[in-house]
Amino acid sequence: MKLKIKKSDYNLIVNTAVENYPFECCGILAGKNNIVEKFYKMKNVSDKPEICYFMDPKEQINVMKEIRISDMELLAIYHSHINVKAYPSKRDIELAFYPDAFYIIVSVFDKKFQEMNIFKIINGEILDAEFEILE
Image (cartoon, helix red, strand yellow):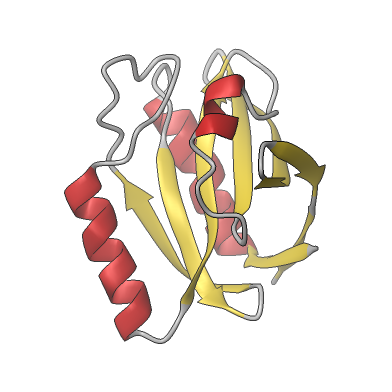
């Protein structure tokens, strides 16, 4: 299980996470054959954005339509964690509605990038995954 992501998209995820500190950021990556082709930065509309994320439902529907129309697939959902490890929380597991998707978590401590990890979350089970950075 490996997601292939361009270095520019990897950097966008990291920069978005750092820029949004002290709030969590979120977004969607789309493409085909586990190769990311499109980066979607989403609005976090959570009541408590400092500890969790929730994508704007209307924005998410529009992105999902665009992905389908563009003949791509939802490949990954990313979000950041603030001052905690890049590992799925209980809430992250509860919100993992797409078993085929990768889940990327970026950890930001004091406005500094710490780590990025990637997982599959299937029926509540957390599985380590990998990503390959393409130039």
